[in-house]
Amino acid sequence: MRWLILPPLLWLAIVSAPALNGQQASPGQTAAPVPQRSPKPARVYVPPTPPKVQQTPAKNVSAGKPASANLASYSEALRRYRHDRHTRFWWKEHFTTIVLVGGGYYYWDAGYWCPAWGYDPNYESYDYDGPIYTYGNLLPDQVILNVQRALKDLGYYEGGLSGSLSPATRRAISAYQRDYGLEANGIVDGPTVQALGLI
Image (cartoon, rainbow, N blue to C red):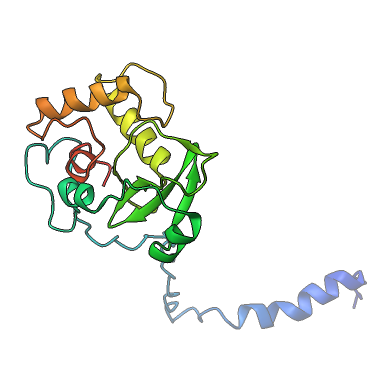
């Protein structure tokens, strides 16, 4: 009898072969189907649907319509306006909000900024002696700047964006007010600011 000398790796293969084949079906049996794993669907981030928000109207859609009830009327602001000269102490006793804008002090009353005459005689340079409507905690020059920008976009104002209620700005406001059925007073009032779509 001949002995066969096999290398050690071959012996390992022969010894482990029955264990590997033990998982296979015998010749008379059919192999059990191997369950196929279905691939996992890819995860896709779907952002939540934003809540429906009422669209803000485009510019000038409210032109010619009465202003909302919450807008102070210019005639009421003009009636309340204090054109008299008073000392700084008097102004502080009667109004809680007084600001220096450009060349003059303004006090806030019922949604309008008004010149505070006499608050500081060194700062009494006002482009306009009357109430200027405000919204969103803006100062008078910021409101005027926004009005100038809106009028410029609509082709009514050709001057520079200065925040000053100059004669050119007042003419542009009057033209816009006439065209859109508002009181043509050349003033920055609530209905005009609303019609321009700024509030």
